[in-house]
Length: 334
Image (cartoon, rainbow, N blue to C red; front, top):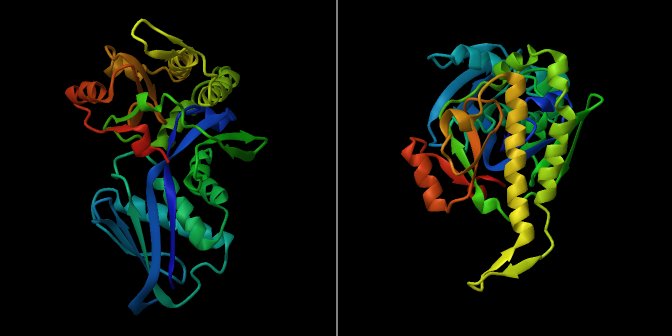
């Protein structure tokens, strides 16, 4: 058996939390993701050996499953290993439930996944896993996610997209479209890792305890912000003037920059009001010359920093505060 596939990681630029309620969300597939390679395993029978490698090429989790019933035979030791084995077993079992011929052989198999980003980064180690297993089993990745880990599904759509997407759940269906989101001001956009990996499922449990009327009130405006931000990335009319230094300034560009920052700030305020948590800017970066927006579950993982300073000055600001992972738009976004 020889099979290989890959899935993109993701960042959710707009619509966090509210995407599960039907708000339009703008998702960015990342250049970094996860691969799966499946080969024969000589010298064994009735065994699926699973190896998970990190971005340094080191095995961080390993387990053997019986092919006959996908029960766990052995797994790595260490904190959380049992839970990881059980989640993986659930994903594999659900894949077989959707495709009864999946892994129905006696010959042993080695399945090896490799993360292209550090495990602590919240770029979608779970969603990329579901995506690559769905490819392997030839099953519906959205159904596989829904019946195992749960979630809106935007990350599954992003996993196979070559471009940013606008994703929305509508009448129980997943809808998304690929878009051009490579704004002229992308050189002012930085992705800063806060060093506190968040559990999206736990975050959604907390969000779901908020009264429904409070959760639903901002839905329409969140969707409008998503579409407005997309519109700002489209080419603007070339309206320019010359200042005394003979330097051309695009009025349309200035307006796009201002509108983008304002929309980010408004989005943060809407989310903060519903989940009753402080904005990342207020918590960590109150003196930052620009705007800060949380991405995904609040309180950890990455934030978007929209800076008015040059790259060197911006990175120096975050480094001084102890945040060493600062990536540009072109470095991270596909």
